Length: 113
Image (cartoon, rainbow, N blue to C red; front, side, top):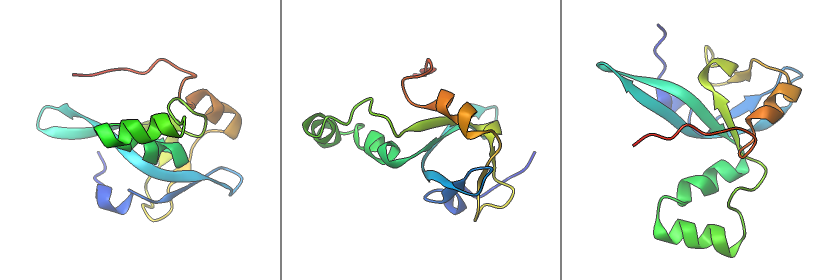
């Protein structure tokens, strides 16, 4: 199992197969697995940063004012669809067509408590 310092991934631009940018890693979602913390998905795109704000009352109010909740531009990409072997240049491991299936709202999101 590979270990990558998450500080080296947060805020990095993610590149598509054809060399274009799909956005920046704004959130890294992980779950406890025994003694380990295992990444399950990456939130990429301009609205991922706004999603992070929604955890606070002020953030929620801002999202409502600018009508940004559930807006296009947020990808919830499974961990195995991004190559992080080179943390300075994460790379998408699926086509941009498949990427559209990871847009927020296009799939059911697993919730945890």
